[in-house]
Each structure stands twice: as structure tokens, then as C-alpha cells.
Length: 225
Image (cartoon, rainbow, N blue to C red; front, side):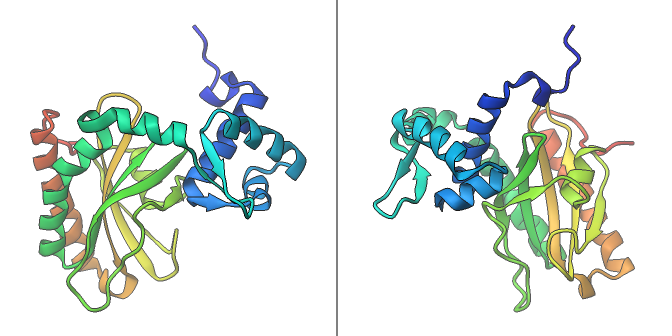
């Protein structure tokens, strides 16, 4: 049995290509300098790999030299249609996010993770004038964040303050799902509103919603006993 970590099984040249591809997708559009810096590569090396991706249509390059998602990737994404698992998950989770935002008065999020980073893919915004917004499509590290720590202990609520943005508190809970995809629900808002009493109430609300969602997904109770 191969016990090497997944990253160790990827040839360096392939890893560089994938890193660049992910950097372009994550940025939406970026130039050569930004893509190379994001991956710790020289511009010459980055350009060689990006040209290969461009030749296969996975990235596109405009007249200013900026790279973005290419026609091949768009075509492949379109073939998923109604079978897109993320879109299906978002459709199921959105009503739960809406209910959680109404109950807590804070913005709520759904994030998915491939084990390297987490990406926020759905939200229900708080109705308050001062509220947290703007994380849809954002990638966050798993190191020291509420999402990352929650994924290490599925079914348990984890609270972190200032891990991604100063003065912002996040409470996250990972739902144990089959396979390698990590799925978390989060309540996020200004630190000053997360008093101990509010935090405990938010954690309890998150647990209830996660359990209902787990049952809907056929997973049983989502929260560890």
C-alpha cells in the first residue's frame, strides 16, 4: 500500500502546472507576474507551463497578457449540467443557511474543501446594517482558521477570531460526508457581537441546522456525540 501523502505522489512538473491552473482559477484573471509569484516560480518557468495550459484551452490569455479560465475548462464545466455536485449541494444547503442567518442575525456560509484550501460557495447575509459579506468565491487556508480546524474534528463547532480578517469571528462546523470533499457551515460576523452567551447560542443553532442537514443528506446526525 502506498502511504505517501497525496502531494508526494504528484511529479513536480505536474504539480507546478496544477498550481498555476488553480492560481488562475482562484484569481479569476491574473498576469504572469502574479501567477508566478503565487506559485513560487520564476516568470520563465510559469510562462512555459501557462502556455501549455493555453494550448489545451484550459486557460485563455487576453491582449494585455492576463490569464483567465479557458474554453476547454468552460466546456467541461458545462458538461456537468444538472449533475454538478456542488450546485446540487448548494441547492440543498441554501434554505438551511437562510434559516440559520435569520435565527442568529449573522451571515452564514457554506464552504467546501479539497484538503488543501477551503472555498466559500454559498451564503445568506445578515439583515443587520453592520454585517459580514464578500467571502463567496474566496479561498482560505486551513491552517488556524475555523473552517480548517472544524474539518479536523467533523461534527464539532470551532470558533476563531481574526484568523482571516481582523475583528471578525467565525464559528464553523464540518459535516461528515463520504469521500474526500470537506463540507462546513459557518456563522461569521463582527467580533464584538460574539459574546460568550451569543457564541454558545450560535454554536447550538449551528449544531441543530447541521443535524437537520445531515438527516436530509441521509447521513444521520451530523454532530459528534
